[in-house]
Amino acid sequence: MKNRVDKQKDFEAIKKALEASTNVFVASFEKITVAQDYQLRKTVRSVGASYKVVKNTLAEKASEGLPIAPAVTGLKGMTSIAYTSGDPVALAKALVAYAKTTPAFTFKAGFVEGRVVEVSSITELANLPSREEVLSKLLYLINAPAQRLVSAVNGVGRNLAVVIDQGVKENKFNQ
Image 1 (cartoon, rainbow, N blue to C red):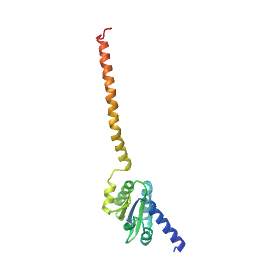
Image 2 (cartoon, rainbow, N blue to C red):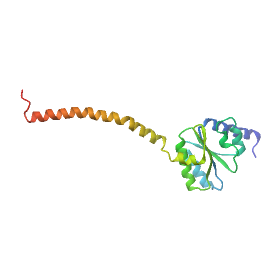
Image 3 (spheres, rainbow, N blue to C red):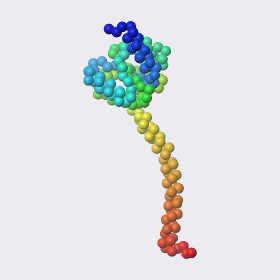
């Protein structure tokens, strides 16, 4: 059993994690095996996030005064949190994919970019393109007009060179 000092350290660690994270997914993990838990932790780490099993009362007390408080109030059963300050879509995709293969893993709540979201919204978030995909599409859209302009400018010079070359070949330009 933990002593008071260890409990205080756990409380401070969870409070610090909740304060620093802009995206938190609260889940239930009842009846999963150690191997499944290891795979879940590995999956969460692969997207740059963290995963922690928490006591419900500890999470509730640690979230007091924070925007995430409504998401962790009144939790029942075994609870875990996956959190990150990075891309929420990548974490949501990883967790939803894991939940599909492990039915014992279910979502309880979510907190994305400063607001509490419903459980159904987590699945919708997982269906969005990743940050990298959105940025690459945006860069393509920004770059496309510039490429067209360069092609048009080069095309005029190229067409002029072809006309002059044909005129020289047919001796239409007499000096």
